[in-house]
Structures are given as structure tokens and as C-alpha cells.
Image 1 (cartoon, rainbow, N blue to C red):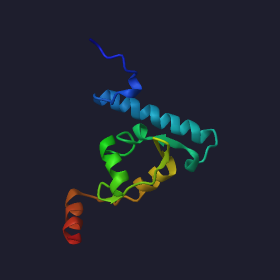
Image 2 (cartoon, rainbow, N blue to C red):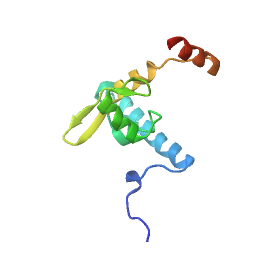
Image 3 (cartoon, rainbow, N blue to C red):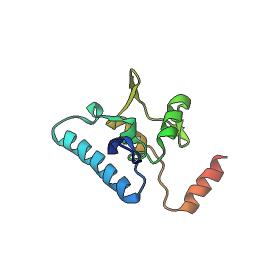
Amino acid sequence: MTSTKPAHDTPATSPDAYRTERGRILAEILEAERAGLAAHLIELSERQVFPFLIPCSPRTGRDARRTGTLLGRPAPMFIKRGRQVYYRYSDILAWLEAAEAFPSTAAAMAKELADR
């Protein structure tokens, strides 16, 4: 028997589905910005953020809310309304921009060794 779940309730399983869903989410954000909505007023659901904007599973995102750490850094801020969890687009952008960038894997490994 086939599942009757709507497409938005199922995770993207193929690379094409991932790209399509990520593109749809980014298009919605861009549309809101073009309409004059400030980044701090754009709220995204957990399903929109993980894995489409932050490269980790939704489970890792939920764990990050409990521990306060995501991928070795402080987790992005979130909003909770009842059982629903939302992230401000501005907080997601700030979290992504705060990531340390490296010119090569060797440089990243050297930094990691130096931090130990």
C-alpha cells in the first residue's frame, strides 16, 4: 500500500528532491524579503531549517535545542509557540556567518589540533 502523506511531511530522499525543496524554501524567503519583510520577522519552521539551510538532520537540530550546541558551536536561537518551533531567518544567517572558514582541509585540521 502506498503512503498518502503530503509531500511536505516527508523528508527529501533523493538529491533532486533535496535541491527542489531547498530551492522552494529559499524562493519563499526571497519573496518575503522583496515584499519588504525584514529578516528578523521571517520565521522558518524546523523542517525548513534542517537540513535545507543548516546541514544536519532535524534530530540533530532538536538535540541542539536541548544541549545548546550545534555542530560544535552555540546553537541558533529559536522561538517556541506551544509545540511549534520556529527560527528567525536573521538568527540562521548569523549562525551561518559565524562559522569559521578555511582555505583547505589541512588548515582546518591544523586549527583543530591547535585548539586541543
